[in-house]
Amino acid sequence: MTELKVQPAARRDALSFCIGGVALFAVTMFLYLADFDFPQAAWALLYIASAAIFLLGVAKMVEPPVSLVITPQNIRYEHRRGTWQLEWDNLLRFDIPRTHRGLELEELPYIGFRVHDMEPVLDSISPRLAVYLVSEQRHLLAAALRREQPELNDYTPYYDIPTSYKAPSGKLYRGVQALFAVRCEQLRQLLGYDLYVPASALDRPLDEFCQWMQQVKQHRQTVKSESDKR
Image 1 (tube, rainbow, N blue to C red):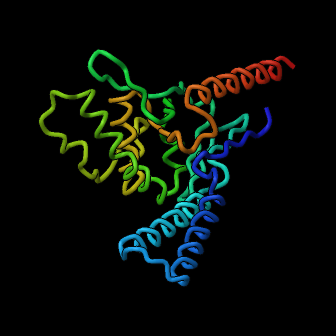
Image 2 (cartoon, rainbow, N blue to C red):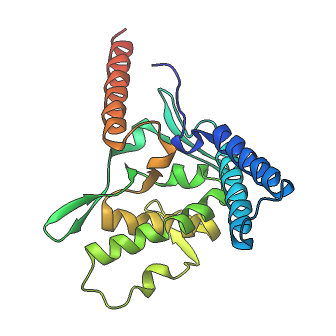
């Protein structure tokens, strides 16, 4: 298996949005200079819309061109705020996380990774990314608590900031690493996975991506088995 790269869907049409924003602004300016009789609110709406479309395009363009790098050794998540890395041998399973909604199971817009040992991930994650993921996943934690622990009246302990985190090996983590480790532990208890990659970071629908990842995993295992026999 060679190195595989996943390009995020969030970057799609970035240039089109930028061009569209500039074009709308140019048309608005032309109409204004031509003394078209529009209400003041309409002019403001056109300016706001052109700026919003352009800024959306810029936001898409600043996203990394690659979100996941998959090699025979590991899976690396790339984000503009940093990276985390997960060894294949440290990966237990992956799938779309689901929560209970009444008697049904509802899929969440993520792919989840269940990890055997979080220490290598904690050692690899950049502090800026750890802080960002804790903040980004607050709504994921809130949804999981509402649906998986509806009997709880006080969710405060889930949002407390820990002073430290003690790994099973006895290693002590502090600061943002401890905060990220506790959040991963909470989500594992509620949803069954430690690490989460949003659907917007993938290049295909979640179910197709999981099938593709399974094929990659099987191919890797086949190549590894053949290499061990030599």
